[in-house]
Every structure is written in structure tokens, then in C-alpha cells.
Length: 357
Image (cartoon, rainbow, N blue to C red; front, top):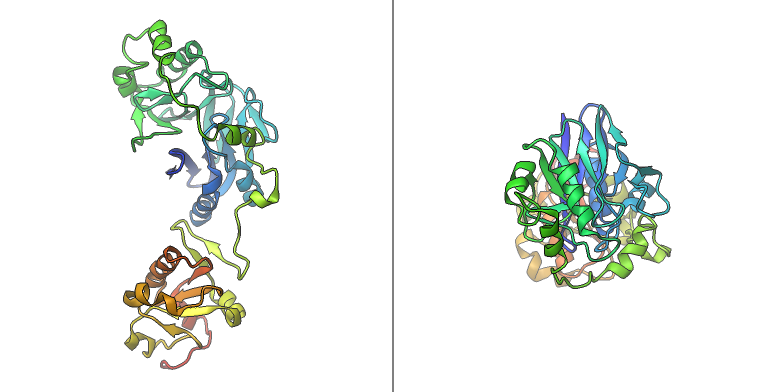
């Protein structure tokens, strides 16, 4: 069974794609984004996958890849086109090369035109393909910079993508309208640039008159992506919390484990967001925990110091997860949720005040 997840970066409208083999628990990630590497790593870990590789459809001009960050964490190989001109990759892919994960594989198809190094990754059974910026949903990538060539793109799409089976699902690297997927049959029929009986000269005329603005981040993104996302300075790395060992979840929440909370409790503010009867009830409470029920947190957050980390606690970890989000929105920078809440804290034998034996 194939594990498949479509992920989105709202800043650049970039889609990343996680594909995994459910038996072998091996996976690849297509077009990761630097700012979302922590999120993607959390998903890989939560699904119990081994990330074998990150794959680029091309050298992006609108965001920096997260490939190097993920390699740093997981040891995953970085793969991209041999024609990309990038340095620091572990595997340079050519047309026809396969990237395997478990019993599955992606076939690399060279689809230049947006850039020299554009490729499309086709799943082994041709049920889906990942087209990068070559073919978009009812559109195509631009061809007016970074070695773009409309004639080359036209031939790439018509020979390498639209020749796939009609039911093959196509997943682009971007969509700016919230569209998520299309198919070969749809694009053959409805793509206003490349479908139907549109000829090469029609497409060239269309693309040469788009009049699009220059990409805002191109002068930053392209040099960084030619290094496979490796920052020039360590100061560019995403900041990691240093006040306790924390885990970032795919839900976007920092969690602290009970042993780490007990070890670092002297430097942490603990806020218990249960109701008063729970706080004084059978589960007991953590020593020093301040009671602020979740419904009152928005108006009482000022009772917490902003220069000390805060850990939110509840019965199971659900309400306190919401509390941690509320505190972050209120401007608190060092916030975490106690994983498993008081149920886990008590079950694992950590000390409580009050409660029943």
C-alpha cells in the first residue's frame, strides 16, 4: 500500500509530496520547503517512516529547498536533475533513472522548458506523476527566465506528460488558487495553453506575452537552491528551543515529555488549564502548577511571565495543546505542551500533589 501525503507551504504556494511504502516503511519527499522542514520531519517520524531521499523537480526561484535540513536530521540523500547545475547533491538524476523506496519507485523523466533541469517523477504504475513547474493545473510554468524556453516546454509536456494514461493524476509544485490535483485527461482537454489542438507556435506566442513580474525571491532562492538548500551561515538555520528537550509535532505544537519536564521544572512555569474541580480532583496536580482554566487563558495570560518558558498541562494533553497555541498567539515564545497530560504523568509515577492513591 502506498502512503501519500500532499503538503502545502502558504508563503510560496508550494506543494511538497511524501510517498512511502507501507510495508518497508521507506519514503521519499518531493520538493521540500526550508521553512516547512520541521513540519515534514514531524510527519515522517509520526508515520514511522525512514526518509531515504528528498527529490527536487527543479532549482526553484520562489522558495529555498528543505533538502539539506532534512539530510542533516535524517541522513536522507538529496536527488535532482544532472542538468540542474546544483552542487552538493548525493544523486544526480538523468532521464529514465529510478528512485526506489521499498518495493515502489519513481521514474525520472526530463521535462525541461521552465529550467534546463526540470524533471517529472512518475510513479511505477503510472497512476500519478509530479510535474514540478512544467505542467500546472490548467496552466504551465513560466519560460521567461532561468533558461526557460517555450518550445522546449511544449515538447516536454506533450511527449513526456500528456502521453501518460488518461487517468494518471498530475500533481504540480505550485497552485495559486487552491487547486490540488488534475489528470492527464483533463489537461489534454482543458489546459488553455497546452491542451487540445494547440500547436507549438500557439504556445510560444502565449508564453512570450504573459508579462509576468520578476519573482521576488529569485536572487535569494536560486543561489541557495544551487547549494541544495545549505545555508551560507549557521545563523540562517531555524532556531531550536534550548530550554528543554522538545519534540515538534505535525500538528504544529512543541511537546515536552514528562521526564524532561521534571528535570527542568525549576526553570519552567507550569500552567494547568483544567477546571478547578479537576485541578483539585483525583488525578492531582504537578507541584507549582498555576491553575488557569482554558476558558480564562485569553484574559489571564498576563499573569504569566514572558521571560520564562511555559508548559501547559491538562488531563490528556488535548486542551493544553490548544492552550499552547493560544499562548504562542499571545506572544509567548517558549511554550510547550505536556505530552499525555496528567494521565501519563501519573501513570508513569511522577510526583503529584493531592489526588487519590
